[in-house]
Image (tube, rainbow, N blue to C red):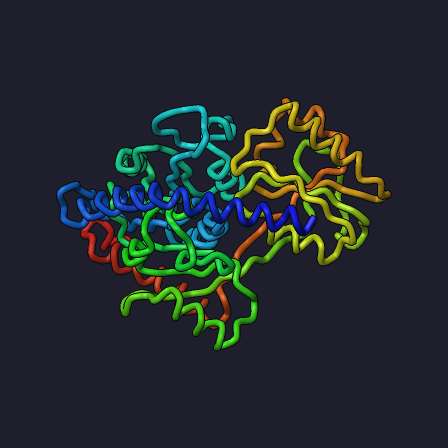
Length: 373
């Protein structure tokens, strides 16, 4: 087994070297595109309404969704909030304002999750973010703050505030351009961010660790660097599934079903309380089919341990609760684990203040809003 692992490692290293010229070419193309926006050869549209963009330099797995939810909770009691996403892997095109009858296939799994959790905000999708914002502002109750999900590379909109996320265990400073690595653009793109958040970091950070990461990322003088960590919730029942879970320690084995970019944190969370945990990984944003569900059930049946459960992520739950799949899953011991993020206690007050200050000042500088605050 060790020999096979070593062979796989060397093959991957060789593949990285062979693909490097392609990565360099891709990086130069994205760099030139960004320069055209910086030089105003290509235009970016600025909106008077506060617009906060959340994104990353890599292809995924940094925790955008829970960070968007953190901003929603921070702002929604004071302002009308709208989230605008492209609706990755949806089967539709154009602008859609989420409603009760929309499924994940029409608006995407992440917008479906936002809509199901927050009934007092607007959730919309549009691959053309400029058009999407314009449509939101035409509503009878237009948003007072717009959150752009996964929009760091979307230069056609000029956000008023930009948040860049990077995984503590896979900092963009250590990564490479696609296809050699996972970066969508050169690391220098991080300079556009107002705030950099190091996600999935330990709950307790030593000064040495904070200093080491800061040295690696090299934030600009005007950039703020914050740290966040994951807080997993309790095992939770899935609507339409009969199973009602109890505490994690009540189970001897679990099959984790994950179609997200990085299931490792949830896997470790389950292993902390359940002796035997197996993980069945699907591609990120995977559209589950009846055949995939049958494969999941077969894998679950092969775990020859009593008192076992199936666990999935909150995002995957949005796709698995489709009526066609619930027929097969209804009687199975399937549940999900909700997830939230927390800003590190040493950073939380400053981060919250920076967001609230930006929103208040932007709205205060807009004559249309001055009489409302």
